[in-house]
Length: 108
Image (cartoon, rainbow, N blue to C red; front, top):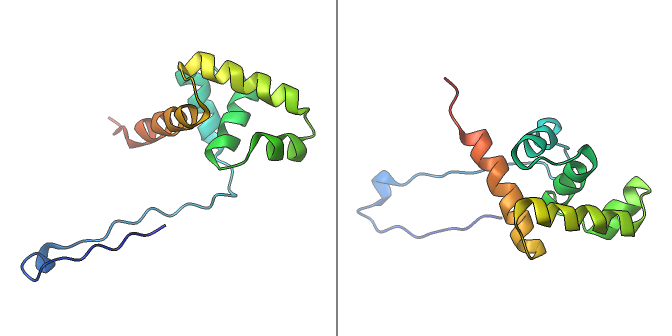
């Protein structure tokens, strides 16, 4: 999603563009490992967390992985407990924030 902003004539000389591109279908291999370390997730919980961050619904994830929807919702309940989240939107925000913070941390 792009958002265009109009600039005044005086500020056009200092205008810049910043774009983040990401393939939502590409699985992040290290993303699961980062979430496991940050929140103490199991591998299965981390897989569900990554799927939610990529925009998959719990039902879609269950169908794609041949796991029962009850199992997926159990993982989501545990994800909420481990992240201190009460709602799904809050959970996804915290997961994305953690992944962004870790990726943005400069290396020594």
